[in-house]
Image 1 (spheres, rainbow, N blue to C red):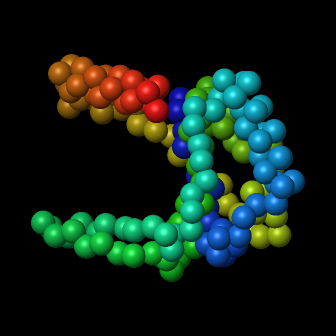
Image 2 (spheres, rainbow, N blue to C red):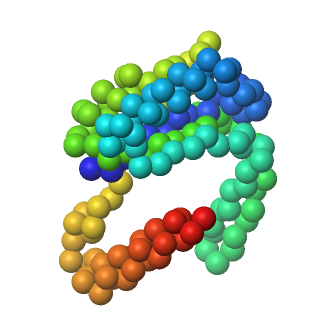
Image 3 (cartoon, rainbow, N blue to C red):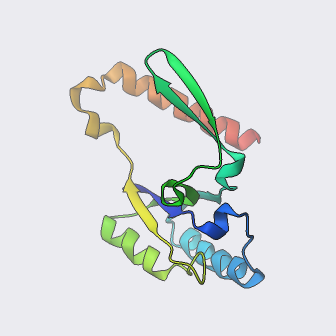
Length: 145
């Protein structure tokens, strides 16, 4: 089971406050444990929403909205992608995570990815083959970079 673990933004992350050396060390240690356990597939921190954009789709129109975005609780400060056996395992790992924003209430959300079998018959063998080709191309690009 693959999950995305989403670290929600706080006023500090939105203000661009950088983590302390201690927090960076603690997060590195946590990430090392995830990698050694074969859980971590990827992850990164994100810059404040003031440096981001949103694109709103309305019919055929596309409206570009400049950050910052008002609702901090709707903004993502960082993420991991994990491979776990169950949602319970993901929760166990999050409970071991260092507090990402000491001194502030922080929320981490865990969301499972859709897997091919979730789409049923609509995800035809031809579409699955095309998806496999795209994933292989992305992996080749990542190894080149």
